[in-house]
Length: 446
Image (tube, rainbow, N blue to C red):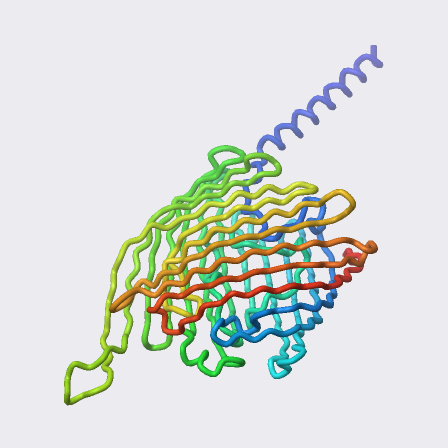
């Protein structure tokens, strides 16, 4: 009898523990859908909790337009030596990521253009409390806009409307110093709803290097941004929300713009491998610019300055779809937003479409194919609005020679056309062929 009681007691205890565990799991809110990463790594290439990675590359390229200007076309061979140092750590209460990319360029003939490009990216995510999350991001870039060698997994396309700087326009051979810093706080109001507030500052400055007339005609850019939003998880895999954004653009003392926008946003995990995001709404821009026009006063020949103020509504939005598996990455993105003119224009309406596919083929061969199209139209103009059309395409092959060594061959094409209302009329057709070696030892795990 005592033995039977012990058995029933043990069974009752086991059922109570299982029931309590199931109740606890049911009370834990499921993870909300997250915006996919901008890189092109396979699922098996995603980093683990903490580690350090070092990558070195040496490459030789043939560039048939190193200045990026058809009117001053120079062909040359470029030798590049660089690498990547990545540090990341992930804990239950915080995440940290740091990446540094130096790249030295040596020109065979135009040796006066030799330089060292550098880029530093910082990402931090901290849970200040159970319901409060803080994100910090910062990117520093000091370069000339030359496309540096990258492994297929590091190819990146714009996704969403997070960046404060327009990267779809090609500028002539002028050194650029840019910084894009932002912060965001997210407060979980309940298991399904959350509020978030964001702010940021970005700038882009140009310094003449290879084109004697470039720096005087390029627009330095400074941007302050802020926003607030509300998100609600309708189902475990679908989140919708409303977001308000404010951006303040300044281009020296001559041009100034304030843009406000309201967007409806959705994020849907269609399957474990597919994520679909969408945002759509309207933007209101208040632009103020000073233009030089011919004088009509015979007593004051030459040009005079006139001030133009433009206020307008415009639609804004975008969408992206990402498919990521062990052997394939497919990303499609499109958006239209008010943005800076990338140095060639002040504030513009920027439309962008991009596609990328990466595939691991039979025999360990890895292929990446990219294509994009962009159009930027100025918000202001006395006799007409400046417009810049840009197209690009790329094809890259990678083949591992050893577990830590791979050969990389790539081709990139850039095309850009400007109309007669762009101050610096810059048309460019550029072909670049690259052959390089990538060395990446095994990651160091913490």
